[in-house]
Length: 58
Image (cartoon, rainbow, N blue to C red):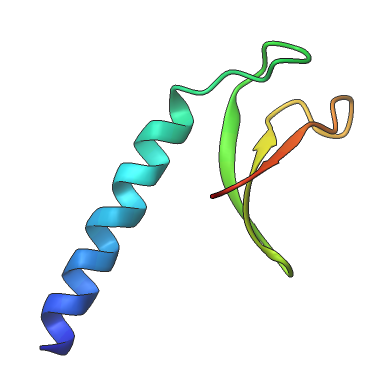
């Protein structure tokens, strides 16, 4: 059971990373990548710190 949960979680994380690679920053056209912060997961611009755009994962 635990192995199945780990497998499902790994698949979800990999899919989320693939989706995030396709996202483009609306401010600077940089690539958005999935990040983990103290308030949860979010998409952050690859051009940080020049661009500080973030979007919370829903």
